[in-house]
Image 1 (cartoon, rainbow, N blue to C red):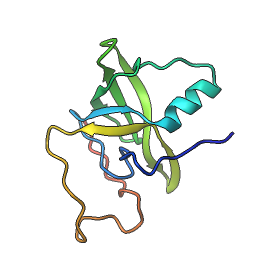
Image 2 (cartoon, one colour):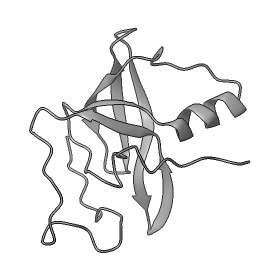
Image 3 (cartoon, one colour):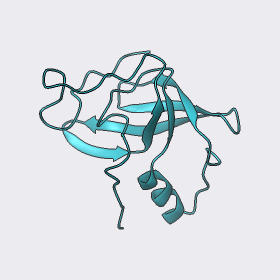
Image 4 (cartoon, one colour):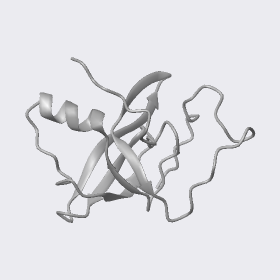
Length: 117
């Protein structure tokens, strides 16, 4: 299984912490994995909004095109192991904070502090 990871996308969970209200889209990695498994694109090419953040580094997204909530989108690490990043940031209602030296994660992965919603 070969998966391409883009450096142009800002991954939710890797580059920015998941928050309710973020506008997101599926990453190329997520679309490739879905195609390999014969599953369709639930977003229909449109963005969605994160409606719930789970403590197990997954989120629920309500897709704009279908108005349906889908769950289980991976966005981080579990027990120190790197997982897939299925969502990329489109916009954030709270404002996207630019990375500075004091708030940039040194390991490249956001620490395990997923908000409970």
